[in-house]
Image (tube, rainbow, N blue to C red):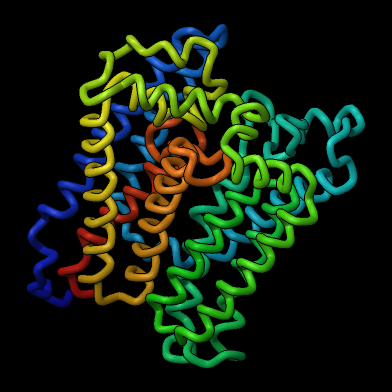
Length: 383
């Protein structure tokens, strides 16, 4: 006979239903904002088409993941992560051999150079940013190791080191592209899982300190990053070196309290270079105003609150670790995007979850939300 269901507060489905509604709302808002932000662009149809197709594919992924038992990802963790590492390694090799210059014909076609970086794998009919997949596969891999190691995570050699290996590998290969911001996001996501799993605070602090030193070294010894950081410290220089930073702030200021109205913003008309992706929050601030930005922030806060609540009320170590990782991924990406637009940190290139244009990114976020719903739905059931 099958084991009876276990009575648990998680059986009250309001958390997972609210999480699903928030996911749908943020995705719909993203489509609307992308429509307004990209309408001036010559490639407007392509960008809106990407977002619509991403929402369609991601919506299916969300529904399937929400219904599927999340524990299946534990069995798929290693194949998914190894495939991601293989893709990142191929891009890293090309980035090292042909840094900032064109590669031979076929290689340049497969791994094109865009905006001074090689982050994309171009296949027939699609273009994939492998580091986007790493957001999900790394979280699954670290959560799987946490479940396998158990109490040994508190030991340095037997627990902490094995947890750090996939984090260092994924983040290190991403840095080579180069994409320092994505590497930071991967590192923070992995460390958050390790911290919740019971890794000693001293070990987590050591990893964070080593990571901070590594980031500082990459900034100091990379002329492009050093110039960006130097200009960030001097606002006048920053406006001269990267005008879109100041144009983004102007957009926020133009919005005032209630905004100019949907589609009525002017900064997107060629002033903000990436108003549909890297600086989409500026477009939202101009058209929706301070009130709109507060409501959006509350939406993300509520989404992350539900994600962490699901993690807290889950008894399965793998489910808890995975819920923390996927929620942290959304929270940190949103915070970094907002910090860039408000000139609180140098431009990173990270998009706003569920909102910015990016088909693969949207699919991964919707898949992650579906997994969170699956974890929440199974909290009150016996194995």
